[in-house]
Image: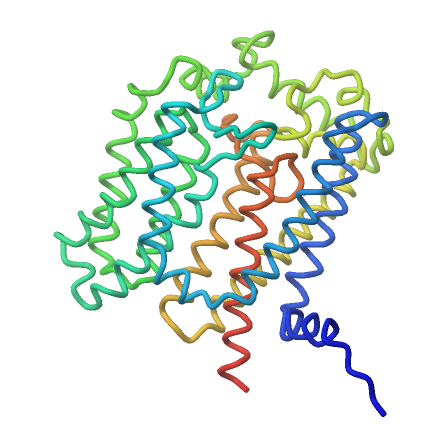
Length: 371
């Protein structure tokens, strides 16, 4: 007599048709991230490392949940999520927790989270729902203005916090959704040109420290002991790693605290110093396979909503990797954008795992259709 174990059946159903490349890349990044955070935050009595492990564990549960939640349901519910998180963004400005000169977090006891992080998912979901409901009229100019207004409202609150990194990230997401939604080329070019013309004006509204970051990006040596210090120390750490690095937890720049906020914004500098060019290439290859699998899922998906959503979420991951590593090596200004699954932070880990779960679901829905 064969004994059936209900838990095994449930687990089998959750893992059924999971994309193996996404899953392997996710687990590899968690392993690298855990090692990097442990090294960057000290090796004795390490609450950062322990919290990161808890967030990874919670993230896996979240990924499994979203991989089993039909992405069309998320699109249908996007208006409600949009309203809830707009309310949370308003709360952030009223009673938010301030750290390092920015008010981005809501704090409940010892728990805090960053609502703006979740707008990376909610904004494209809301845009996609609008386009699907509008159907053929979605790209009439009056509807394009409505669509851009949906983005502009949360963007204004995010800039107010201020959170320049997330603000910058929302712009390519909007363009990707419009492009994948088959907006007429002339209208897309008009929007891009208009955005480019607005950029110099937007610079005038930046905070002084944000303007200083851009100036330092152009010439870090102009304030080597002030705003340019982070980038210079990060570049020294990356270069000093040479071919194979100084060894885990042996990096002088990181262990002697020359690199500020090394466990979040500058975690890649820690990895490059301790594991060298070889370790850096391995990390880049993991991201490469992850992103290429995301694009493959977009190509496989047969439904417009899934294509737009998959492309937008893959764009989020790509932009975070590109901007974060870019600011670590001095080719991008410092904006506070985290490196997916490697940087320390609960909100960042949760959002990335939600993204990976949704990509898994798009893939699984494709497999169902094929079967």
